[in-house]
View 1 (cartoon, rainbow, N blue to C red):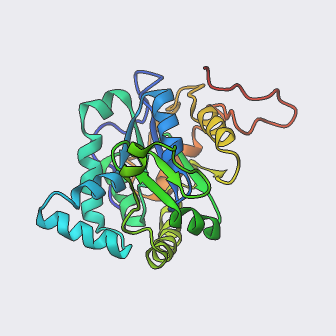
View 2: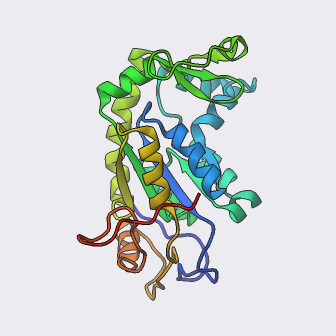
Length: 275
């Protein structure tokens, strides 16, 4: 089932050729998104919108909705699409997101969520997917420690926390970081991504999440750097109504925006993001 893109002219061209960045970053639990999200926010000044973080805060707010969220998180199940979509809609409608741009973290996670993004006119410029094998993700999640005050993420063996009593006293494990819940979350992630790919396959770029952290961060920043207008086309078609329309729109701009990560054979090395 398809629904029309909400409102506005039948054009994706912005008067400003350098509009605020609109980014999506995806990856299974434990892929290391948090570290790279912080680097992206620091570099480009976008607003980090993490539905997961928002939900984890909601589970402690003492409301009926918060209690329901807590049960979903403990069991490793996804919260209903309606709730996740409502959170995203509220966050992206803030003046800060409109002026600074945004980095949407692990959303959309289902085909229905992707379709709702189209319905709301939420179309990212770039979609980052960090790939890590499941057995590595399991190891990372089981040893993960989170600073409950700063949100910094450590690992019992791979990235131990500083030898600081104050920091160590704040470290907690997520309630859903146990083997059964992790397996369920990984299965759900892979199953649901099949429904999302149809909507984003032409703007998705996969990155190897097992390379050195600093190398991956460098490549991500180079890929995101806006070297050309992000919207370089105008559509004479009716409003976008399906995944095929979205793909066709992105195909219309192919070749008009430089790709700093995969240059043509024989081309000079891609420019790195400025310091």
